[in-house]
Length: 461
Ligand code: 2IT
Image (cartoon, rainbow, N blue to C red):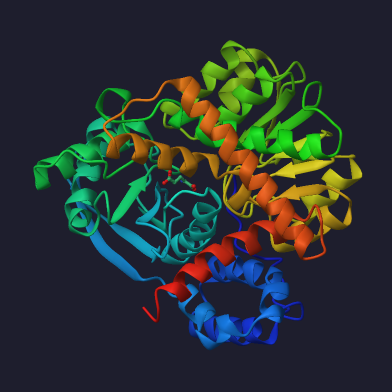
């Protein structure tokens, strides 16, 4: 789970339509230090050329210029007391990126690596991802450079209360609905919700990922990982293969990895790796049964390391290395942005890997994506393959609006349908562009069209 700048970022704009190239150049000149944000913009802009060649409408309406500018960014100081009674200060943000198709929607990330550039990239991606779910949700993202690692439960509570005190005026069930992300799980959502309720004296669906007793949806914790595996299943099916019997590598050991391991194992695949910032474990027998539950224990220890798994189950631990060197059929990066670089991609290709589906947001660097694709690996970008998490957040919002509690079966059926629809939509959009099977282009084009057309419909706002 090593975050890694964008050392091998490709800044060529050759593949871009002249309009996209101009806007990209303008953004690059305006915020040259926002490398992750620029990486995300570049990836979208490079793939929508067929759309921009067909019509000048988006240029006439300055849609790209508007798309790369968040509607609003809230930046605030988060002051809290640690257990020793010291006053601590962190930075908090909420990037309300685009609400053309619904209220801003997206997670909160608490991690020492969080920056405004990182949140802008995540909010930008979220806008297209949410559009792909088919549900009325705009894009947003927020968080703090607060690291929950090693913090006590009371410290986390005090931090969350302070964070919400600064944020509560700017969110709401019909305005902006945050959720969890790295470092923000059920516990944090509970503290954030409690403070929102106290400050506003309202009980509303202002956050998703809530507890099951107080408005949460069944399967929301599992949804991102489950959805990822459902998507991967579709990718394999399209090529006449099945997931059962396949060897799978997973990176990370948090919420997304946990759900992915659970579902992949249930469907008969064998997950042989997990990873943390400390390195990766190789479990040739497969992560299954109680080992999957142990992932939850590892996570709640708050130590952000995976090595204890190796000690407990007597398997190999590779310190400071990434799991991509292990030969597998399917790789599922589920940790963090830019965790799969060129050398990793080369190894996956050389070892005969056939599918890469992203569980994290933008875990593969642009050069690595090129290497995977040139090497014949079928690649799915996170905005398509990890959309099951926010998709199920959308289902939680639907349940809250109508005062309903759906069964797990119903949520699972809806989640499967959402993932199937995203797969097919991306497939069809890519085919229309003359590149069948190109999920990257398909997802970007389908997401772009929905958001861009909605913006045009609503005039110059
Ligand atoms: O990256 C993501 O899609 C999430 N962290 C989930 C966002 C949400 O609103 O459920």
